[in-house]
Figure 1 (tube, rainbow, N blue to C red):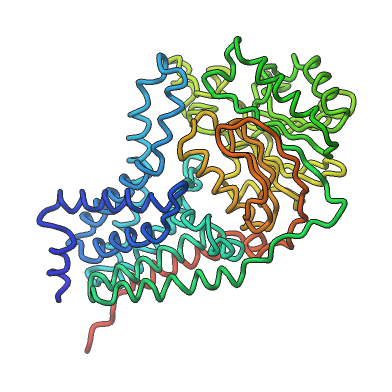
Figure 2: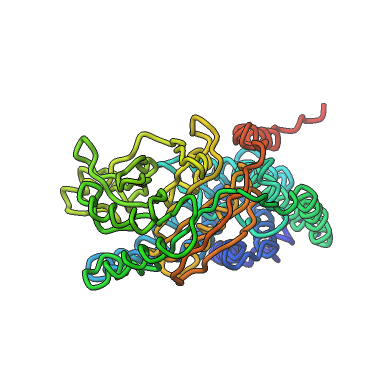
Length: 507
């Protein structure tokens, strides 16, 4: 069977049908993300894209197919992005459809550009096309984590967050595992385009060993010797539309106080992001009440504070035994359009503020990652909400922590896939760096994640409560923690250039 005949069977009868099929495949690939976790369906969908690219008539058509695939993928994977706009529907509801359309279409440009570059370099050779596309897409995913401060959400490697293959993240990180995932799908797709009968056996031969390797690499369950630090994670479950409402705000505050004062004596209590309605300069009485409830035990909690320069910060503080802020961390990696507005001068002139910002100027970024010494609880690297999705925010700390301390307010996204995908990325960060993750989330999912990415204890979405967890020790630094992503970025570039190298013409 010739590639042209396969092309007709795979792609339909015209450009529009091919684009529609690519968008459908992209949506199927999104089902590999949490909470669906259908990794093998996602791989099959990716293989379909590579078969389309292998048989596309021109680089321009290939770019359109890759863009359509990306648009379908991000539209389904990130459908939860509309939720924040309905918290105050009268003011922001009209933005919701535009947010999804522009976000999905904009992120898909990375994949469309990768498709164009790959086909331009590889010419009309189906197998080199597929390999070049795998390298180009992996590079595009790396760039997606940096451009405009980055947004590496719903990356191909994240389909492996739940399962034995997660152990591979310690060796490759997300960037490397994305390249390996795309390469496996690309080779399967090339078989689908050239030898359809071999596609399924080829896919199985490429993927199943990875699951076996992951199982072999997965460390045994952690053991907790006596005397390990005990941490209390508090989950008040304050829906975003009620969180700052005057009729409810004190209810959630008192709920957190009661959980803090519950029986037991942990070494640290953790409240979530923006846990109290007062800024730090107006929170003296609240901090005294919190210290009384904790019986002098340190409490880490999120709040807003005005900095010395007058700008507002989204911050975490740790109280001391006298009801004062013993340590302060200011979030440094802010959410575009949520915590600050790009082109802020124009946004302020138009009276548009970020959804979670305290003023038209938005939040000011902190100086960067820091490690906090929390006494008996150990050394923590604080991460506020969005900061967790970037591995570089962990590598950027001057010293290695004993654990990652993640506080977040995923109530903005209700009980959709958004909080579950955020939680999946917390598991990946744990596996990548060999560090336990303590996570306190306003509406869930609060949890202790061990250094291999296993969930030891958790509170589900939409429930109030608290959990006391014994903190496991970190593993030794992983290969990825030591090397970072650059070896894998170089490997993706090498594949792209190798596949694009012209064949020598016979004499």
